[in-house]
Amino acid sequence: MATKRPHSAIHPSRREQVPQDEQPRRKRQKPDHIHGKSFKKAHTVHELRTHIRSLKRLLEHNDDLPADVRVEKERALQTAQHELAETERAKERSDMIGKWHKVRFFERQKASKRLKRARRAVAECEDLAGKVELEARVEEAEVDVNYAMYFPLGMEYVPLFPKRRRRSEGAEGGEGDGGQGVGGDEERQGDQKVWQLVRRCMEDGQLEALRNGKLTGSRAEGDAGSVVTTHKKRAKEKRRAPNVVVEGNRRERRSALAAHADSEAESEGGFFE
Image 1 (cartoon, one colour):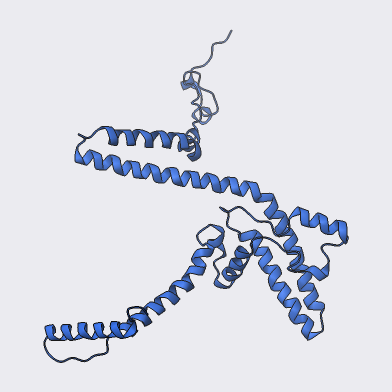
Image 2 (cartoon, one colour):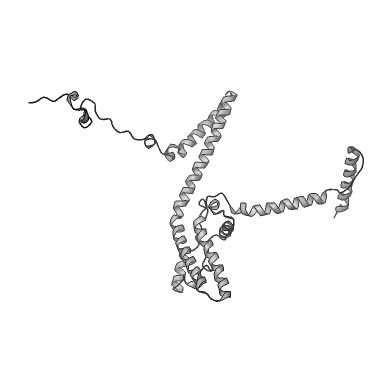
């Protein structure tokens, strides 16, 4: 039986093709990020709560902690509490998205069909008065589409077209989705406050902020109210400011202004007025 030639006897051009028995093949390693746990598993709510509880016990039961250690543990406690709040908020948001995903999808499809019918009706209409009314319905149908798309993800979704409404309309009249009801108030339900907020955000270009929960109805309504309140305060302060020109030093001017303010207070309101 012929003996096997040593590796050195093989031609250099064929050495890469001949397997080497002395050196076993190294197993291909996977990237580091595949071996590690995902962010959701690495930052569980249970671990964060345990960490917060241990930090609270450490700070409450150890009064002789050094100042720098106590400050460090207090900062760690605040960080853990913030992470816990963010994790719980993200979980609630994820659950809410999964709960209403199908409803929002089908309502967006239905609102898009109503919008197409409304635009077709505007294009086919020749009467000027009827065209104005149909254009208003087109605007409402556009708001309906954006309502289904940009309703705040962290809030409980309020359907525009509930199933009970559709069934009752189908049982009574047959065509509950006819062309006469395009964008009509009798068919649309939903949350009217959010619907109006979507309409304002369409004009301001803030639909994405509304969808991500960065804009709420109270905030949008409070901006105008705060401006009005500020103007009222300034007008009130200007009205109360005494328009008296007094000559003399600082003490004399101050006493004269105080006397003028007292006289105005007496003249504005009596004792039993």
